Image (tube, rainbow, N blue to C red; front, top):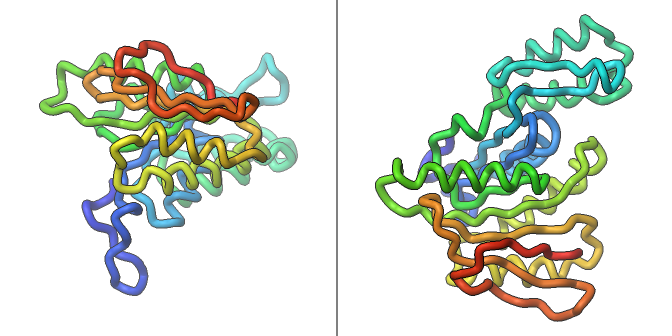
Length: 243
């Protein structure tokens, strides 16, 4: 886990923006969340990553033969297991490369439902994952001693190496946009999204107290050309930013 104040290679304290507590979340904590985790960690951010699935499920020889592991299984073990099963196949599909990247970032995939930390910004990479992340945050409201406002963002990203590589820099830019936590964070994210005309991914934005209170919904639509800031605090549904 990151410390309250990080130090760069020159011995200087990193800017406040770099000390945001960030979480990247996908289904299995292997591809999309780890691509973003690796990039943000390299840039000096305090970042963790998680999956929400019941198991770590990876593509196998066919759709009917996935590779299934429990969360907490070390990436090094998964790497050796895949290599033992079919080195050529998993080299071609990029799974071995993914495991090598992951091993350099942390030890093993972690499950969001078992996480007890709070984060300033949580980025998911699939709407189904977004829903689970929010559900867990709401369910923990009684266990928190204080309200911790979190910005929950979803980038709708296909689970492929190519799409993950495109989405990771977008997650980095979003982290840069919410530096320090402004008074209208949803509006800030909306403004950024409106400026990303080349972005391929739809975006869901919600400001949430980890206690479960929804405090706003980022809205906007590139096709309409009219960006809208945070929604009313009574808004119960999230809106899609069409990019």
